[in-house]
Length: 112
Image (cartoon, rainbow, N blue to C red; front, top):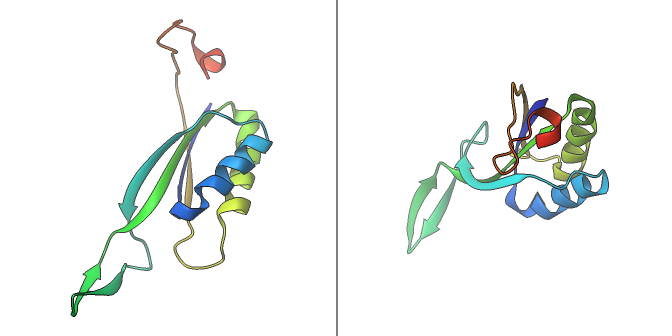
């Protein structure tokens, strides 16, 4: 099993959710996060004063899938989140040792 964590632009969330839904992936966790990468934030003007915004709003999507479904999910995320501009985000994939559904105590793939 693998865990996919994707950091994307907030306005792309619905497109990513729809793309994942089209390939049969329904469950995910979504968090509002802040961060920066190479773009290093930007400056804004508020009441005549310029200030630096270091941390930009992003969305973090977390999905746990069986190994055989990971490549399709990654392709769906990338194709739907990509704008071609700086700050599109990143996808991280890591191994998951065990999953246990609390309600039924099912383990492994059955718990996904």
